[in-house]
Length: 415
Picture (cartoon, rainbow, N blue to C red):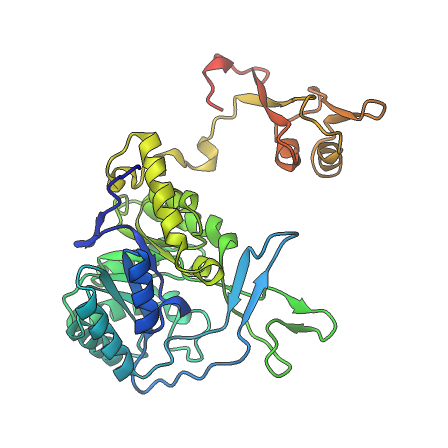
């Protein structure tokens, strides 16, 4: 059995493994968090706690999904807000969790409407025994513009609220970022200036996932109407990874401590977030779809990956991919890689021909008699759309050639 060290230190707190429940419906009470701890999660970000004066009033139904062909669902739309339990109940659950699981990491997520709220909530969750605070500056479906993503797009306000939390607590604190911005860097820097010790990213993306075409209403339908709200799941992973890279490549943020969120369902997803700079990982939609037990597969897969990479400690992998993602204008444009078609594997379906002709550069020649595709190198630009649509993997990367007028050795090019 492979046994690698999955523990990691993040903001001065020791995690037995990087996997945490994110602040969401999956960690809404003592019993849920207890089950997650017992299943093997390294930490829990308890569902966001708001001030006593803010009343949570939810709609029903409040979920929708985005699916594709035979997949269960690739995206998830959620109209739910912060914890619906009373402040007293939430604080009691935090206290009980820490008493019963002193070696597990307990992170309190908080959200206020003003500086006084933030100070008081920080003080209360600290007294309840939390190990860390996460500031929710990013929930996209709050009914108050004083809360959530409307705050998270305002760098000055984020800084002020971070300062408020630091007045209420000396716990390590991370600010949870909204992806509903063009550039996250200025807001992250403002949070750090305000006292944040690290960043959690991303929260959900504002969305309308689907419409009922007959009733002409967005989904889910709530008494004949719908609303824009947060989108999560596997489909948002590329966006989350983009923000990770932009943060870690920004001047002054090269070593930014990050808790990564956004479409993590498998160990491969987890490894990608770690390689782009995440120290800890937060999961919601994967749990809602498959249950807490997915952590077993993610831990096991990550340890096997570490074994393959010759790595003993997880922290050795953090950020290794950041230097390999560079500005578009700096990419090597000297060579072209032609597709190579394995006619033994080819099933003659014609997918590559149709996609190339209708969506690329008409470089696949179709032999109707043999029902086989061939590459016309005079027309091919090396985009490899054909290989991506092939259902049996019969098209791979083949010959590498220099473009006219370029110099160098094509054999040196890394594919």
